[in-house]
Length: 493
Ligand SMILES: [Zn+2]
Image (cartoon, rainbow, N blue to C red; front, top):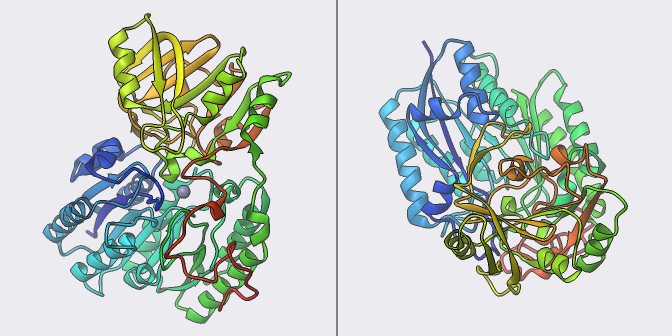
């Protein structure tokens, strides 16, 4: 019986956020070890579950190693990175020999002193299993793919969707590719092109626009008989690294030249669309005015500049302050991260009125907001996503309270959490479908869940560490020339 080792090591890093990635960020996500992976992750719509299901269907032996996933944040502290990697590798070593290794990675993970932490995970695993044991890894669509990652693996497979709703399918595809290699039915080679380009995440959506066109082109190439998998990576842009850029990876069956040619063709199409990847955002005051006076709701105000999915702390009070200033009087759902305010609200007690200063605790980028209201709800904050992406996955936002101030329902939580899923609000009995204004802190991840019922969507230009105004950051390591900071004619330079 074939024996396949399965692991996960995921975190999305950010160079400009005030929040480091310590053990706490992994605890807020998850760390599962050994058999716990099978009991806790099977049945979820995530990569590891897809890989497990394919292995089970084919009656293979599964060796579950370590599965860890942190909330997006700054660079992973070196002791945390080494601790988790050692744990993963020791578990792998104890299972040797294995016939193959499947790893679910994000691909934009940076550790202190290691720009390419995802590449290091693959390289260290390769050292351990040797050249003869195939390794396939799944990656987020926002991965920063490097030569090291390509060299250390037999196949890299990325999501095809943004908002990400095909995690499970990507894991399943990765496992199928791995099995084909083990059984000698495929001999994968990878074509890889990196572009000197980063772009705002609003346009990494595959629902419409330039990146959808690009993904369709990529999927057309994937139907070529000698092509096994095609990925287009719209890298997480807030990474000030010396080796970075959007990229294309084509996995072909034994034909390196074909893989290279197709990767280059898609990269060329990506490059041609570069100016269309930039977005027009609505200034904060205009956005709030439009939302407050809209004839019908729900109006979705998307604050992409404080997006926890991109590594922001989630404590920006920018939109909240503007709504309070505008004396909003229609039902409004909004959220903020502030552990001290959670403490104060819980101390005040359920049903009690209290005055709080909320937000802006992680940096002086903003001023805290002052709000008075009634503590409507107190929760332990644990909840599961219900939408198509990540469905079933448990999230931990820490203790969470809902404060009602007039028509504003403010969710205050201890830790940042992904915002794209309706369960962020419905888990607290708040229904975004019934509200007039809903604030979500994400540039694009909300679209699958919210677009079907939103009367209007406004992308707000607020200050914050995940602002799409990429020229406003202080870049130091990024190679030059680089788009959009320089005009470049040929991306191959
Ligand atoms: Zn992503």
